Image (cartoon, rainbow, N blue to C red):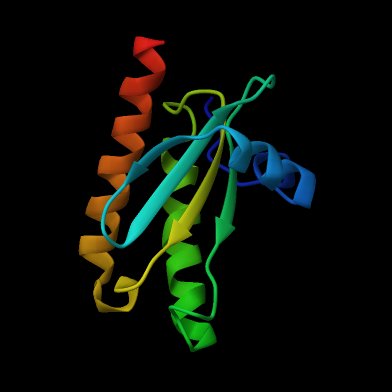
Amino acid sequence: MVKLNFSRELRLVTPAQFKYVFEHPFRAGTPEITLLARKNNLDHPRLGLAVPKKYLKRAHERNRIKRLTRESFRLLQHNLPHCDFVLLVKNGINRLDNRTFNQNLHKLWQRHIRLAQKS
């Protein structure tokens, strides 16, 4: 049976883990979102989130983006390549509704899946 949980082992938690991804990432992006990825030596993908106050002033707005991203990752984790992913948000993210955000994020996941299959 396939587990669709989002346990601690599926998260980037330390600054060193984030730094590893930022050093030589594969990038996929839209005007509002950038999804960085870098291969890891594990048998599962991991997710890190960078959602600063600069673009989303209110906590509930930042939490919405993080919640939607975690849910998307949780559902696709078994299809994703074994990479460490970091989601970065940019100016204009607050104008996206949930549906548009999910569609954009799904396109970015698919782009990383295709990039991993090529390499």
